[in-house]
Image 1 (cartoon, rainbow, N blue to C red):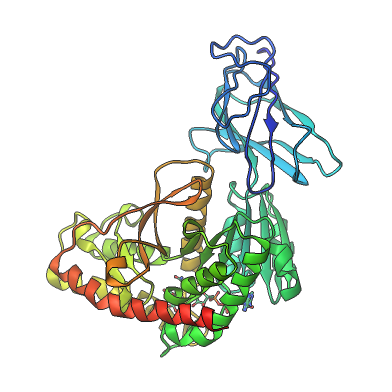
Image 2: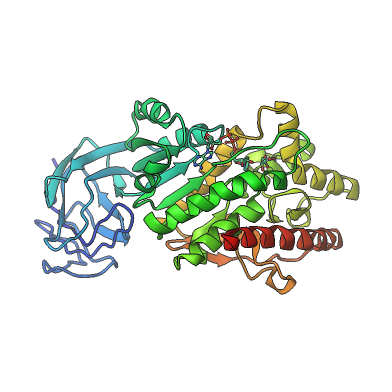
Length: 452
Ligand code: NAD
Ligand code: LMR
């Protein structure tokens, strides 16, 4: 039996979404060289050590790495008495550091602290030796339009995501059923359904991430812009609710036309004085997902490893695949065919669904991928890059304020916007075609938001 360890971590203030860890630690029988004092330290930097079982340190506000070589330990977490806004529940999992997404997670605790508890303790038994992470599950994700064609499979994928602790499902219809159904899945997040406009504020309050697939989809013969009249008002009302109830949330917009709905939400947040360009994202992931698939279809590459940068916006000519940057050789004919297929991939699905909607399942996967990348970045994982339509300097010289390129995500959302890189002559032509369309789409969205 390996010696037990006691660790005290003081968390200030631990809300479900913005966890600032100011901690001090104490380890019984400490032997680690980087011994921390028993006095509270206000720091987010590593400052805790363990005893002969290894060390614990905070790598990011709500993640600690915990190294131990035995199969039995005690872990304690404790709030400082002056913590405000304690969460009602706190769940902690411990997982193998080597592969947090696929390795088996071991539940260390799930604690109801609504009765005012300030400290709690778990016995961790029967873990093989190794390096683990203690993870306070603190991220709340809300899905708006959760009962829809995208909303349901997206919510399912998020229910399976260990980075989500609280899943809030909002729609005008059917969310109680969707939430009840998903709540039976034995993952560690809590699911709650909210139905009807009166419950939107509660659904999103305290959310770290709000994903919006609310609104009508296309039918054959329609452009995405044809959805504007209906979806503009839907996203604007959601934007108003976010400004009031979750002004610090990261907002991921799936509803079409993305080129315009994103500026609508941004302008709505601006009017309320809470716009932060690092936290508003148009979800364009499906374009790169498709591009990888279509390129691999003709080149026989592994689709899951084929990376294609796609920039611009999310409709027709505004979708600009940068095939010259893939490192794969294409004939001009292949380039033109692939470009067209990537630009109009959405139409293939709309046509095949024959009036019953547009892409839902591939979109759910793409949306879940982007949401997960953001959650990982928010928790401090470095080097996470995803394409997304953001407030960007990249095309600003051409009068285009919102533009999708690869973006490095970080603890505050947008961390670094990648430039376009070198373009072929053909791609320069595509860019020139995209610019006036993007200008028009963005202006339309901004004017809509500002006329009310
Ligand atoms: P859907 O009709 O199946 O579902 C939409 C859901 O939104 C419905 O459940 C509806 O009740 C709900 N809704 C409507 N108004 C609402 C409101 N005010 N508040 C909350 N919920 C509301 O449609 P879908 O197939 O899921 O598509 C949703 C949107 O996503 C469409 O606009 C579609 O064009 C878009 N989309 C975008 C991408 C992309 O790549 N960004 C991909 C596919 C679809
Ligand atoms: C897509 O690209 O599949 C979506 O934008 C839905 C659509 O209308 O094509």
